[in-house]
Length: 71
Image (cartoon, rainbow, N blue to C red; front, side):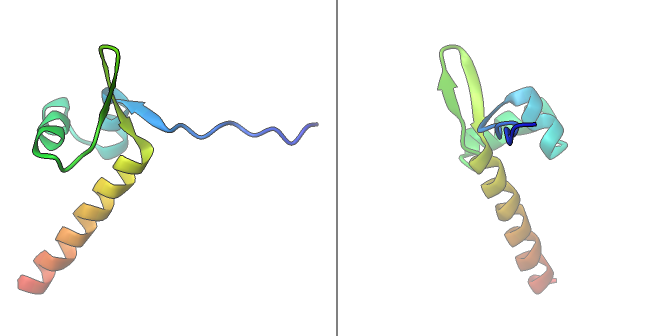
């Protein structure tokens, strides 16, 4: 058996990001338009980098902490 591993995905289609983030297509595109979720275009496809998904989750966590601090 060789030591090959499955490559990690670096780019996700919007439908994949919807599943990962448990958000609707509309919300994903709203977040992209507002600059809260980065994306790239390849041809006619809009793709979301894995790093952008991690950054978006970190943003949500920071906002949750600051919301708790205010409440």
